[in-house]
Image 1: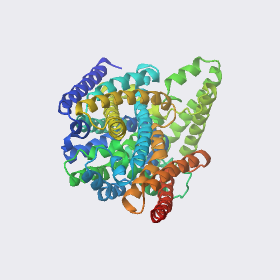
Image 2: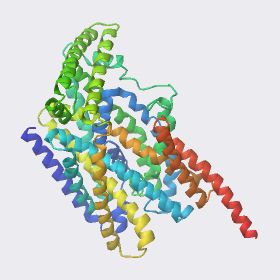
Image 3: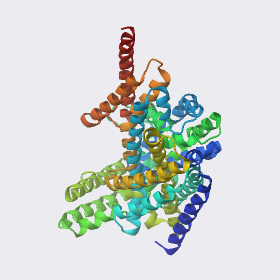
Image 4: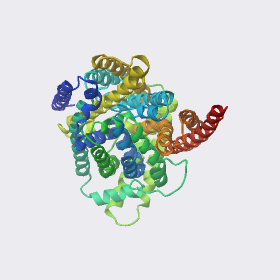
Amino acid sequence: MHWIDWTIIAIYLAWIVWDGIRLTKKSHELEGYFLASRSLPWWAVGLSVMATQLSAITMIGTTGQGYVDGMRFLQFYYALPIAMIVLSVTLVPFFHNAKVYTAYEYLEQRFDAKTRAFTSFLFLVSRSMSLGVVISAPAVVLSVVMGLSVTNTVLLIALPTAAYTMFGGVQAVAWTDVKQIVLIVFGLVAAVVVLVLALPPEVGIVEGLRLAGSTGRLQTFDFTFDLTNQYTFWSGTIAALFLFCSYFGTDQSQVQRYLTTKSVDEARESLLMSAYWKIPLQALVLLVGVFLFLFYLFTPGPMLFNRVHDRGLREGPRAAEYLAIEQRYEAAASARRSAALAGATLAGSNDAFKAREADVRAIRAEALAFVREATGDAAYSDVNYVFPTFITTSMPIGLVGLLIAAIFAAAMSTISGEMASLSTATVIDFYRRFVRQEAPDRHFLIVSRIATGFWGLFASLVAVWAAELGSLIEVVNRFGSFFYGSILGVFILAIAFRRANGTGAFVGLIAGMASVAWAASFTDVAFLWHNVIGAVVVVAVGLVVSVVAGQRSRVKGQG
């Protein structure tokens, strides 16, 4: 990269760290540190929530997903507005009026300590693993830009961020997020402009999108009802509804945000902001991926975007086989380019282009299979390297630094926010509940900073593993879907069913997690539906056990 780009990155990250530390001066009390003294305006909280969603993992994983699959992933978010409305009516007033630090404190008020502790434990496991994936996203960028290993880049990002977060608070996280989302959106728009200007003179936006559409990359509705298909209209409106209700309604990383607002109404408004703007912003991210496809359609690009694997295979004992596949790929890509130019300039069928596109996809799939066989990495996928490769090789000087600064700054903001929620749950739900119930705020703040450091190290280990699991945006949602449905089921029992008791909720939660584990291990059901399975099983088993346990208690009381 050019020295100007490095300067932009250094200045921006230094400013973000300084600004975050400056804001932590208001976080010397427990409520100020964990909940910003419940004083943040709704619009800042709403932007903070969206900034967390439009993080580095979105810019890297979702753009790569758009390059491969197009706009189909947008269906994943169709239930989001519905979920926000449901939560605004149900869980938001419950949590806000209960004056709790964590969502799981309410479960003890409603059920018992063991249900609260087990649910909070599941949150800690799921969120820490997801945090590892969030750290992996910028690590992928650094590994491409600087030629370092993913392990080294993970440590380079996670350790300084953990140190900064240990002295921070939710107030610093929220106001940092507000700045991040402005830069993120600007960077995405700048990328689209550069990609559009890179189209050949004879190919306009309309012609380019028509070519992308002929490959299915503009498909945003798939009404096929197939439980094994990950992204359809039905999974995005039914299964994803359970995921979003659980994530935004019961995940401490999100609940903690709207608990910082001044009132229930402002908490509701902060959530509804995402209902209005999340789908358009997600469409923008995926559109970047579609234009990346068009860019590499007309501009010769690599067969594999992961430079480390590409270089290793070229210099390895099977180099001749790899180069033979690459020669076939280049010939197929050249034929596809000619067919695309012909199809773009002539109105009518794009059958020739679609045939050449199928050839390219087949050879690329063969190359990916070859990498998995030659390296022994069965999960290898280079979808996460597509956008970083474009940024570092094709963006103008200055914009390279700006986009990478946006990715890293967004990552640091998201990481610090999630570390703060992990620390809050650890201290409030476990340390203060079971270890030391009475102590000065200063003592609990010290413990929370130690907890932040621990979760930072744990997430770093997960990040090294997660970086090679495939599409990062899928990985983080796959992690979440394993836990979210069951956690949502417990809160449904708590709020909607008065007959539910602590024994039923606890047994139901165990049954829900077991059912999801079984579905994930022994069926091909898409992971989004795991949220439905977990929630339904928890509610069903929880109600049955509650009735039986209640009857036994009455019998014992009569005896």
